[in-house]
Image 1 (cartoon, rainbow, N blue to C red):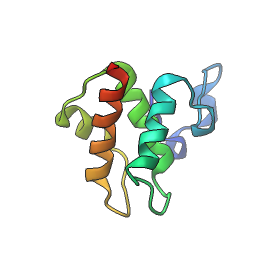
Image 2: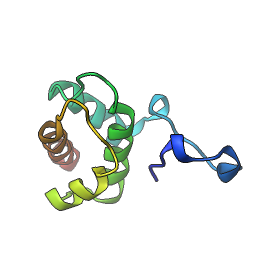
Image 3: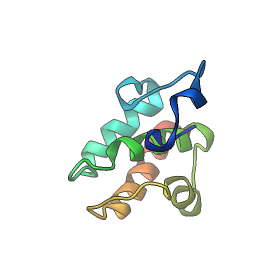
Image 4: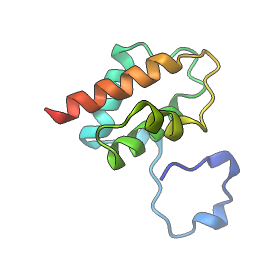
Length: 100
């Protein structure tokens, strides 16, 4: 479950398993990161950790997300460079690659 680290107290996560962007692995995580690079999603890097973590969580729960699913899952991440159309396209492409 994606959680905003800037709004989470350490005491609230005691005993919880935490995965950061550096720990993302597996087919979904690796595919998201590869497609992100291919689609030139990253610009300034401000939002990339949150965007990728949210995309991985979405695709873990919903293998074929709709635009509404994507908009809802990604709504908490602000992209200063406004690459939202690339983000949505990258999530759709990742879902397509995961089907094969």
